[in-house]
Amino acid sequence: MIFTVAVDGPAAAGKGTISKRLAAELGLAHLDTGLLYRAVGARVLGGEEAAAAARGLVPADLDRPGLRQPAIADAASRVAALPEVRRALLEFQRAFARREGGAVLDGRDIGTVICPEAEAKLYVTASAEARAARRHAEQVAAGEAQPLEAVLAEVVARDARDTGRADAPMRAAADAVVIDTTDLGIEEAVARALEIVRGRL
Ligand code: CDP
Ligand code: CDP
Image 1: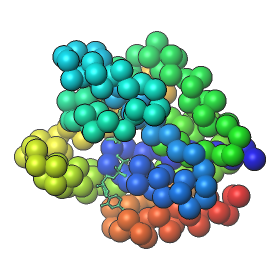
Image 2 (image 1 turned 180 degrees about the vertical axis):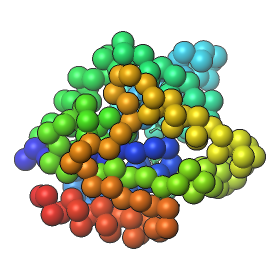
Image 3 (image 1 turned 90 degrees about the vertical axis):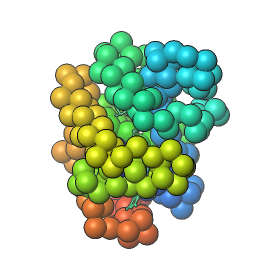
């Protein structure tokens, strides 16, 4: 069976959480494509730790917590605007999307560029304030929080860069179903996503 679920949307909208749960519930493979750009961004930033993280470009090593740092998110969105970088990562993502057994991919351009033929497309979004509050809460839990206003400014700047670039800008595919998670708990958002995807299976 080939069945692709494309999950796109801005930072901290809940794409990753929803995608992991969809993959687990439906028995599909999952790829967080943001980690590919984070790995490239980390390498560009340089430094020993960043270089070590970047070496994890192979999927098995992609969950390194180091790649979650805010500086790496910023570097990722800068390298993500370069057509050469996007081109280098394209085939790996396309092959993953159409692998036997089915797959969920989350990112910015899955439904528009990587897999326009995806059987199910979701665009997960939320207000910038709600998304910044979530990222801030994650940082507090990890013991390394920036001020909330700084997190909000970063989220807004990154959204603008991702929406404004010429190559594969972030946007909802015409046939994507939009899920606004601003006022949705995780369980409600997952239930809504599952209902939509099951309807396409
Ligand atoms: O993958 P993406 O950056 O879109 O977001 P995420 O990592 O799935 O979610 C960001 C944070 O928001 C996580 O800490 C989630 O637990 C939280 N979240 C939430 O509070 N409510 C939701 N409906 C979805 C996610
Ligand atoms: O988790 P969060 O939503 O904060 O970020 P991410 O999904 O890890 O993506 C980091 C950056 O990589 C984004 O801001 C985009 O610039 C870039 N990206 C992209 O251009 N295309 C994708 N398919 C995934 C990520």
